Image 1: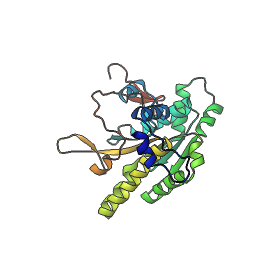
Image 2: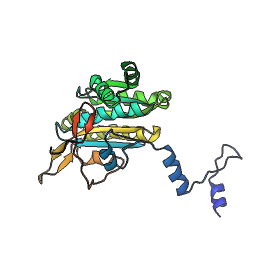
Image 3: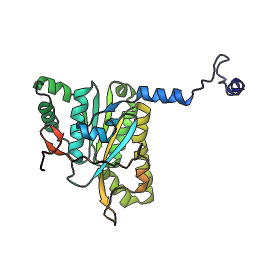
Length: 251
């Protein structure tokens, strides 16, 4: 019966063309074979994130000003380029990126590294500035056009941070701004899905009336993240030369 159904949907381009039927198990194994998990640079944080940050997903981190969001991103960049042969695209909207800070983390965590090795690792970080949504879209479109470049070991895209350039669009254009914001967010999600990339977006947090923290940009933007989970555990960390570290006892 299934063969008859498949024959009815056979492609007309060739008499030999057969419809390929996949089971849920096939799809699951294909997904597991393609997905990579990248450490964020701190073991306890990795455990809370079920291994780290995943490729094929659009991940959002949210926090108040000064909570360590940019340091999280820089530590992630240093960890990824040190542990893989891949490249990272860092889109900076606030001037938070510091190549000296990434080099400091690499040298502090890998005492055997020499500056020549660090320079080779830093060469795999692609840096782009973006001051508005139009520039961000142009950068993302250029990534889509450069398919061969993506296949050449691009592992992650980081936007620090997305709220800075999308918030003015919502305030000025209202409904049209919401539509533009959704298109940009969908581009980020599609890049993650189509090219098996880890896409990490930084967003501001705003307090609700009850004091809880929620992401800015409204509820619609939250629907585009690849997954949502309520963390039942928390990890305290401090920031030093090595990036994200556990605080000393007594702190």
